[in-house]
Length: 200
Image (cartoon, rainbow, N blue to C red; front, top):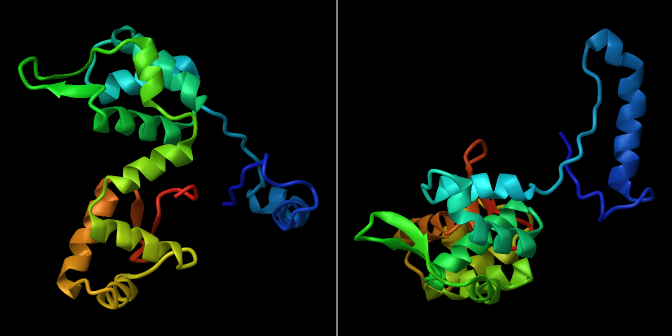
């Protein structure tokens, strides 16, 4: 399985050439092996899909209950699910979306204009804001990971953070905080850690 952003590579890019070569080679044997090569274009989610996602995430009975929120988030994110999640988290961090402990439900009580102002137009700004709000040692973990190509194992992370004065026993907790905040992922099949998105 190969994945790429079609708007970021052209026909001369090595990945595009590789895919053409794979299609050419597999095309000869695809019928015999019953393993054809196919391409699938993925697009941003539509307004209704974002409404369903937000309604489900916030425990609402219907997307109509989050229509204003849906419109603002869709306008800012254009249906990019990664950015949708980041925007929703940003609204929660800024208390524009909050859990009402009296009603036992997620609510928002700000206008469309206020919601619009709470969310940056740039996913990078949203991620920066998120990282800035993390504890100092977790931010240090993120900085150190940014210098490691692709991914790292726990042993390497412990060694690097120990060099920065972080106790070895605390590294797993810091990684857990970064995972819970959607900054890094645990690649369980290879027991390594990587950023959740290339924009991080």
